[in-house]
Image (cartoon, rainbow, N blue to C red):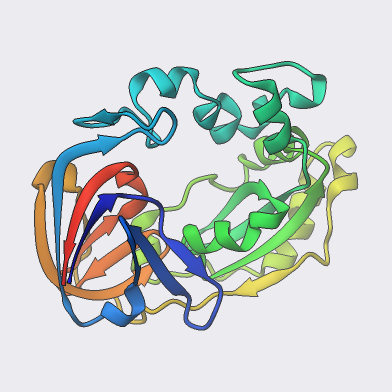
Amino acid sequence: MHAEGPTFKLFNVLKSPVQVYAEVGEHILHLNALIGRSISLEYKGQAICKSCKRDFESLFRMGCCKKCFFESPLAGASILRPELSRAHLNIEDRDLDHEKSFQLQPHVVYLADAGQIKVGVTRLDQVHNRWMDQGAGRARIIAKTNNRHEAGLIEVELKSLYSDKTNWKQMLNNKSDGRELKEEAIHAKESVSNNLKRFFDLDGEQQEIHYDYNIAPANINSFSLKDSLKFKDDLFGLRGQYLIFSSGNAINLRSHEGLVLSWSY
């Protein structure tokens, strides 16, 4: 089968194992069904900005062209740094209506284990998607807030205890931190300023997440189609936003957002 279209982040469904789908042009590919089969991927030298929808040879960052990266609310400062959210103050960054709809809703702060415990922030209604996107083997909600800014303040204070980034190599090697997340939630609450403790939920939801990827290849290397253009190998497993192949090569589809790829299998 052949399919071609711009790349979107993989869509993960919380089952055991997680079921993974890729939107490619007019097709929805169920990637779990392709494990063990040979897949050919080719970057066509074309990309589509997720904001302005215009065609480019390549994109700047976060699936946006350079202009949209610096001007579109889809790449605003609070996306990567929630503490910079200002919609609760009725202050516009790039588009106040968009920012209010995104920032002024319940958010959570969580701890996730994908090789090492990390702290993160996401909207309450997206929490499972966020955990699966990051390839977390287990995760726990530790605080609930009314908006993105409040959650960002907690995250900033907890960065002295935990990283806010996933170590992709540890994640793909199926490593686990081992510390108890409930105990870490207690420790986290004790570590933040008194005005932030009221948001903590020490009985927050915890999930164990299983992926269609049990034994890691001996050597794992991340690669980009922006450099190699073409790639062909047998699909070995799926975790987070990664496709892992039998050779040990792994590709992060999220980092290819907007690039037009051709799929054959």
